[in-house]
Amino acid sequence: MHDIYSLVTGPLAWLSFALFLGGSIFRFTSLYRLAQKKDSAVFEYMSLRYALRSIAHWLTPFATRNMRLNPAMTVVTFAFHICLFIAPLFLFAHVILIQESFGFHFPTLPNAVADILSIIVVLSCLFFAGRRMFLPEVKYLTTWVDIAILVAVAAPFFTGFWVYHQWAGFQTMTLVHIFSGELMIAIIPFTKLFHMFLFPFIRGYIGSEFGNVRMAKDW
Image 1 (cartoon, rainbow, N blue to C red):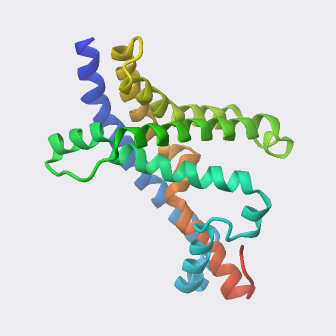
Image 2 (image 1 turned 180 degrees about the vertical axis):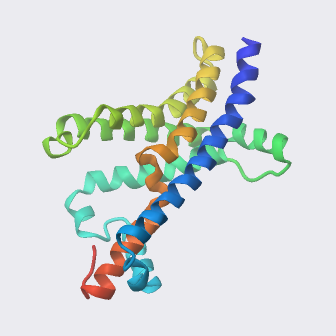
């Protein structure tokens, strides 16, 4: 058990961060070159004003027509993304690890709040999986990879909740928690999870085209 713990908290952790950083740089570089080759005109009509206008609207709950037409999806989507970032970053146990590793400290969430945020993430993943499996227009576009990504995202939160409450087998679950977290970080550049970094560029592109070329709104 100790050897496995050393493996997942040592070499596998560094491999995860290396894949994340290296993969992200590769994706950004590849997409930039592809844009230059396929649609170089985009750089001429890109507008900071229209890009920020589009980003602001799509980051505001119910600010777009599509959000208003799908209120349940809107609420779950915003709750999911907020909890996804806040819970792991400000979790007490994670902050202690960061302090021990890098020497700086920042505020932490009360454990009860962290529990609630983790539950919201897991339930949100179940909601998204249900949409993909049962909603015809979404099911048509869904592959097993989409479901696997949702499992990969939910796993660190589900196992973290399990470990914190020290349910049966929590020592083994601790290893699963660490590994699943590393796996989620490692696959970000190579899956749809990379949309977290592409979002401002995609919205900036579409917002600029609609605002600067079509003279219309994109929300």
